[in-house]
Amino acid sequence: MKSFEELGLNERILQAIGEQGYEYPMPIQEAVIPVLLGNKDENGWQGDLVALAQTGTGKTAAYLLPVLELLSRGGSPENKVNALVLVPTRELAQQVDQLLAGFAYYQDTTWIAIYGGNDGVAFAQQQRALEQGGDIAIATPGRLLSLLRHCKVDLSHVDFLILDEADRMLDIGFYDDIMEIISHLPKERQT
Image (cartoon, rainbow, N blue to C red):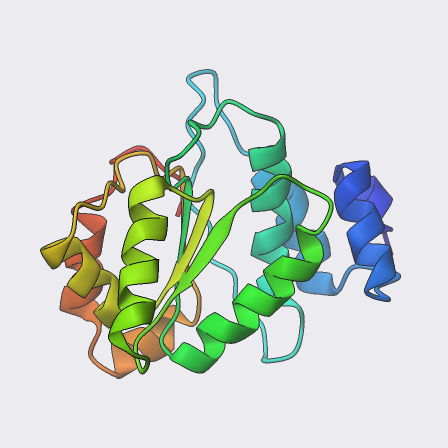
């Protein structure tokens, strides 16, 4: 079993991981993190990855940690959304948001959780946050589409697209929404 130190994560991320009580990476993290951190060809293109694991096995950290590491290395435009995490429900968006807050505690990473089921004030806050650009946007498809259709949202700099629980999003009918969102993203990105 590898340690988090052996996976190529920076000291700030390692400190945050340790303070949350994690000692060793879960199997999905051990398998995925090195691939995502080293997955570039001579043109800088990163290949796509599909990972499957049971609930509670650390899938969220398996994508958040390498995205945080890659963003910390620089090269991504400031004040732009550089990573987009699509999730099927408000509850999952909130969970990812909380986990990200712990992992990114010592970094200068910015993010916004975008989901419905709240008031117009929250919609306006989400709109402003997207327009100003945050490194990572965690969003439910319906709310993000609403913002894309009614606001000035630029997703043309997204380097990382994560479809968390993609099977569930497809099961509940988000295929067309996901495809419309993808049409706003650059063709060269890691999914």
